[in-house]
Length: 147
Image (spheres, rainbow, N blue to C red):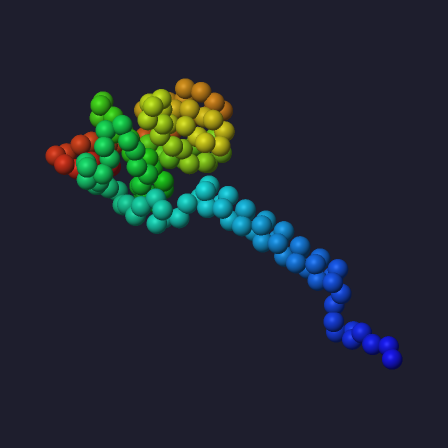
């Protein structure tokens, strides 16, 4: 007697094709999600200061360090140096990537396309067509006030 194969069962090769397709699709979706989360972080990741004025405790940003916040509902970077405190847009004018502070080099840099900015937001290298937008920032007692 010969065993009959049911038409509802799939073959081993077809099953492996489905598994491989699932793994490749999952990898692609995960890569897209991570890339988008890096380029456009959530409001929670940046902070919640969305008003006309934001205050940060001075102790939150030691000298030579920076912190990303949300100012006027947009990403901003606050840098504290020996010269004082500086608040700039964290969005690179080139293609909209988020910039980072490099303490050792005393500059702000776009990690995607290597645009470089000084502490006042002026372009010092790379493809950026204009400087970073700056915001009024000052130290008042034990607080940093932006805006």
